[in-house]
Length: 107
Image (cartoon, rainbow, N blue to C red; front, side, top):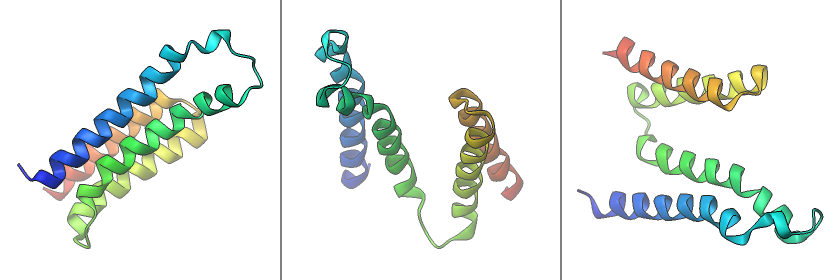
């Protein structure tokens, strides 16, 4: 296994764990609703999603269209379904289906 890929995977996993664990460990139910820590912790969900997206996308970025097309199709499906339905579940499933269908169609 490539050491760079392993390093990125470990960093993404550690960041994902931290973004999920910190709000629980900080016990945000005891915080004031307008405090800076509350605002910071409420931003960890979108930050975790962005971290995982970047970690998943980096290995696929290239100028080779057959490698880039499934990534683009999946990303566009996620964004379109999120805008239309505001559902994380539907957007995730739609992105996975679009990515899979594109890979299948390209052979």
